[in-house]
Length: 193
Length: 112
Image (cartoon, rainbow over all chains, first blue to last red; front, side, top):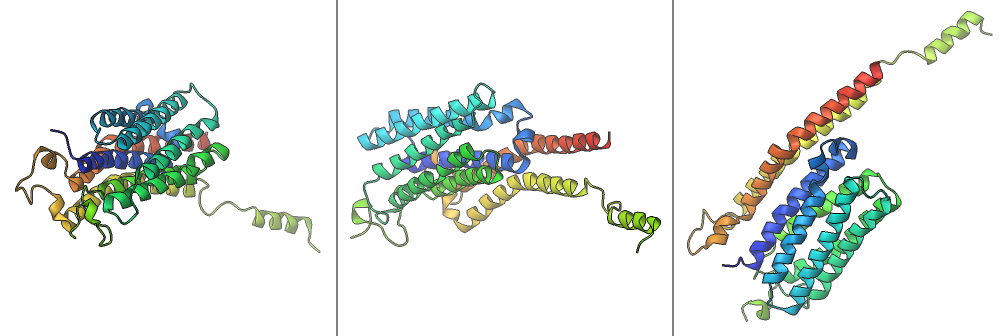
């Protein structure tokens, strides 16, 4: 009894929304206050690691196409790597500000993966539109950790990163397996001829 | 031409005591931060409720015919409400407490 793809996407949307709220709270109070409790400091990296583990599960079970298998595996690898590095940073094992480039790389690879594995145009169906939109959002958002690496401790990066996750959550919540986008739905995607 | 006494008065007029204590703007900002952190959860919950009213067909309870386990388990607007609740109950209270404690510690450090 496997869930439909849209159900899995909504579950991830819920997780992303929670991550977005946590990061937004961190941006509001600042890292010094936010990291006063160890569990809170580890929350975002742990959630990224957990998302990586879940994505590996999806990669295992979602085998209806090679492209999806590869894409989900890449997202899983990217989330796991970003989560592990950030966990080491908040625990004080890694110190360089340039470690946030790993997060940038993860976002960039994830975005590229979204764009490459969507073979249809923007208005093919809602899911195709969202693949393009999420892909470009991730590609653009990868500039935020790069900014954090080059000009650290600026509030704009923290707010931008948090807003990215809230936006991704909204996009994933909007996903349906078969639905139109701005009145367009291809016959090949299940639309009426 | 100013006498010595007038010059001292002029300097004193320029370097007067503040109308507001120096820590007042910081306190106001801190209060805003507390309000912002406390508002995140309820606003998210409100967003979920508004979504449920706007698209009731995404709530399985309202349209139960032919729905399976996953439709009952995962209902997007309710997920948003749950996320808001989780944040309000698990994350926000400790953050507000730490924020207020850091504010009072700063106040203690400034007064000592």
